[in-house]
Image (cartoon, rainbow, N blue to C red; front, top):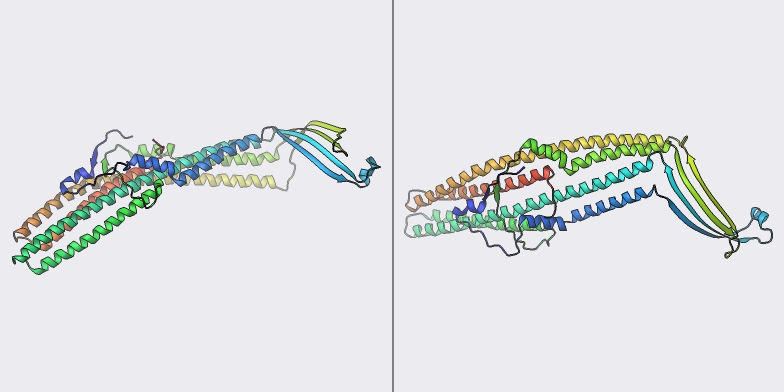
Length: 431
């Protein structure tokens, strides 16, 4: 779906703004490395993997019902009474010991075992889909938090640059005030703006730390670890089309597929419930020895046969089970339709958000160019007493805001594109 790619980084587009990009540590994480780390360490994924493993064993259990089962038993007891006296006249009460081995195997259960096995097979598939769904969600959350760090770091750089700009401007104002070309009000206003800029920088630094902590939590790193990441905010063009995204989502989205499989399970539950009113046939075998002395088992018996039974009337238990299963089927169908609609809505919203952010990148880039020029002109006019201090302050605020808007649009684009890939069910596996 992605053919032509154009890469434009925020650091390249903002290089003319003299924003310094810090050097990265050797162990700084790329986005791919971060996703791999999250897929390996995240607790939600580990929990879902355990659930998928349990579903596999449930399938083994279901298959075991159609196999032969063998039981060994031993009974040691003391027996007396009139009935016993008929057979054992001289030893009352008597010790009584019995050993037996029995075997049984279902031959026909009216489709109950087959339905149970098929439901268990589908259950393993649903568990795998749920695992994949969580993996995709964790990949999206990791990507979102990764870009969150990049955005916060870029916002922080804008605030750092604003402090530098206002500090330099204050020096110029103080020089002009010293020679009497400006009033004290200009100095005071410049000092206030510098303090405000420093406060904004503190907030930006705090936001960066919080973004790193949120990122650490998703990828399974210590919350307070000072994690370093490598990349900058990137604008990468794509050729996604809404109709293609919808088609891909309906055939790949794990929860969409799982919802349809739940419907199949519900249909099988009806067959399993209906089997209780059908003929059941089983093979049975028994071999037993018993006597009144522990070391003597002279009395022996064996039995081999087939047992058939059919439920004639069970107080409407079977009928009620069937009706309940039919209601659960209707519930599963409604939930599947709801999931289908939710998938469609999520794909459309993510696509529209991505396109909006993509458009904003171009408009905010233009605003950055114009606001930078306006700020430079305001400084120059003020330097020759042709402009006011307020003009400089307003131009500086507009310049910082334009850069912030541009960074926000880059962040929105990357996150909404990640949301779109999450919405269509793009695979999330360790690379």
